Length: 282
Image 1: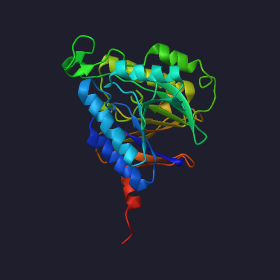
Image 2 (image 1 turned 135 degrees about the vertical axis):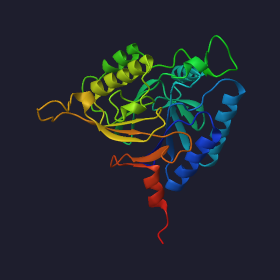
Image 3 (image 1 turned 135 degrees about the horizontal axis):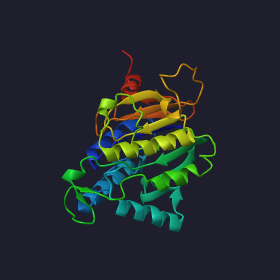
Image 4 (image 1 turned 90 degrees about the horizontal axis):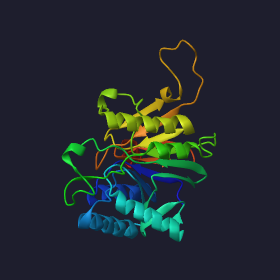
């Protein structure tokens, strides 16, 4: 298995957005593509058509697509796929097969690839709920699902595992970002979103991953989060505690909507760097 993976931001149920990632994965020689939420497991025929299209394209190009859950997902369908895979024990490192080349993560999930420990904590808040209808009330409209958020109970359960007890975590994959994120004016200030970001902070503080990758914000982020672990710029004391290098991905076919992570070296390059490296020399 190739020791590099592609990490990608929200694809929003659009085949062209996923095709864009597959095409670049082929050029970069990367087999596994991980989409960090708002993948596009949507309602009705549109959702089925999207999944069938991308599975066929991934199969023809010998690539595998892995998706963690965001907020704009049909969780009724998503959870049914995950539960059925668990019952049949037909999973790949805990990922549930939706199609032969498309796999879904449970909302909270841990797995090992290439000797590196990953933890997933998916979900987020749909800040546009006022323009959507709840799933069980009406179909055929722009919908939000009542199960879209990572819950306090799920965070508690994760922190009660060996990871909360100090077992090292290399990579945390989420849809939402930390509430400590730089450029705070870009963060949505609504109450529910703040609460959810603070759940992500509980995960970060509890498992102390070396790296954190997320989508949802549709912005490129590249920063070191030590504040969530206790650092304060207002303290006169020297800080020698843990920190988490954080990367946020743009969405759809935006320029930095994807990047390549080398699991041997932990080096992550945004698309702009990868494309530059792939460009032929003059």
